[in-house]
Amino acid sequence: MLKTKILLFLPVFILLGWTLSVQSMISQGTKIDLPVRGYEPRDILACHYLSVAVDYDSFPSECKTEDKELRWKKRESFFCASSGRIVLERRADCGAFIKGYCLYNRFYDNVSRFYVPEEVAGQLEKAVRKKENNPVLRLSVTPEGKAFPIELILQGMPYKEWLKLKY
Image (cartoon, rainbow, N blue to C red; front, side, top):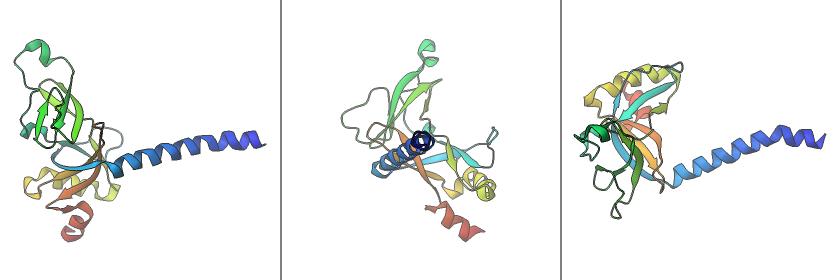
């Protein structure tokens, strides 16, 4: 009987431990605000999350190359928040950084979903597409360069406050 209880609660304890460790990383990370661009969600979870991408195209980048062989090769790279540049090698003067990769002359950071309640996802999807709303994604970045989205900001305020004013 005791063995059965342990086996039943073991997955719960593992999930709880993992959740606490991720939450700890998020709370201790460096907060960085980056511009985003929205795009149409194209998977089965549509309308349960806001599909966004950080607009790294507006930053200077070492990802862009004329070398046809390198262009198609996945290369480790970093977004240095202090200089606002995408670099191929992490520099010592770069404090907070986001670890990602270059492919096809673009930087990818693996941050693509920001979960929101289903009933407001459509309104936010439209709002993110409008430049006048100045959409920004607040990320928490760990010392290892892993980024977690924590807040969507529209016109300088969190999306929940923005929705209250607009709707």
